[in-house]
Image (tube, rainbow, N blue to C red; front, side, top):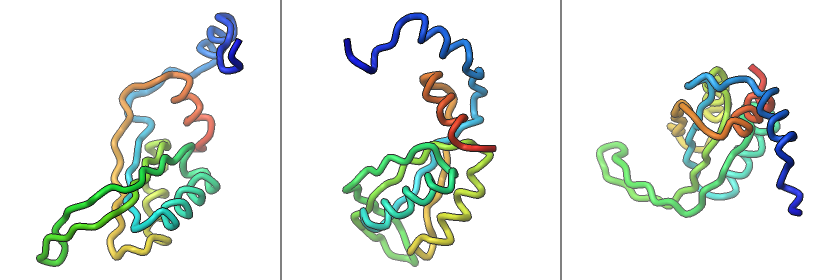
Length: 128
């Protein structure tokens, strides 16, 4: 039997101890970075500071945007950060303080629903 598979009673106990998800109480935040080194540094720091439960690093994206009157195109790395919605302001403040861009992208989308045990893990990992 695979170690990841749990018995029905283990799943029921886990579900019974989980808080119900309040839509919008958790968020996925997105931050673009100029390269993988910067992305990993920021990702590790936000997890260590408990501003996020998890950060996915998505390599090799292309961003096309207007900046100072010109259309720009750059290779970037995307961070997808899972956290409490109440921590987005602190997350944005920290990212601005360490990010090399003049204007760092920090945007967040509320999580309306998802896998209950995962959402519980995010709540358990990131303090309010």
